[in-house]
Image 1 (tube, helix red, strand yellow):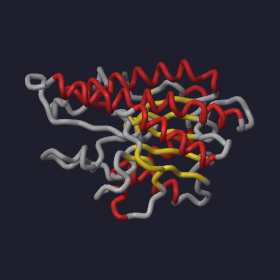
Image 2 (cartoon, rainbow, N blue to C red; image 1 turned 60 degrees about the vertical axis):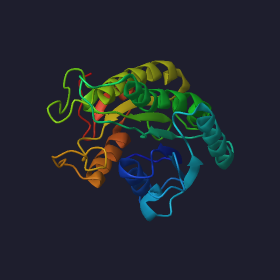
Image 3 (cartoon, helix red, strand yellow; image 1 turned 30 degrees about the horizontal axis):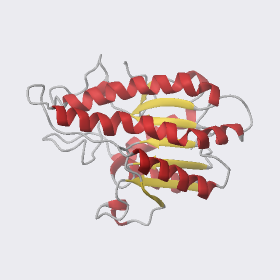
Length: 253
């Protein structure tokens, strides 16, 4: 997988779809990470891991600061001082809505999960990311050293407004536009800590979320994840604070 040599990583929303496939493909590497932490809201739930034996770190409810701090503490205990190289904020949610029927409840719930969650996770895991960066030779930023990757969407691109005619999903779009700004802010704040930060658009993927409408998305989950891992292997100093798609192409803000 190129130059991607990660000792440890954590993926949120790892019970299905893109998160589950990320865990599978990392574990399937010729030289897999020593630590792959899979986190989701309910690790013992009916759909957790889709029947597979995955290394769930336990409950990590991204809207609950206490749950996030507890997950960071558990990860730290496992790593025993070695630090966390890669945090992939994949957990997300969406609700079908139009501009006319969008509600305060929807806007608040979706924003809390899709934007505030990655903010809190970045804060909680920063000490472990810094420790990994300090323990990796060289000063250049990359995903093998220390990185936060936020799973965004071109649906949140103000220029593209991806698939507007397919679904307005206003709360989702606004939350992803805000996530992109958060990613930029993280990149500026955490650069001096040795942590690369980037937002990725996985494409229109055949998942429960992406394929819930009348049209079938063109991209399989395994294709999207394979592409994103290739992108992660190529990210460097110049890419921190950017918004890229699963093929490494720049997505307009």
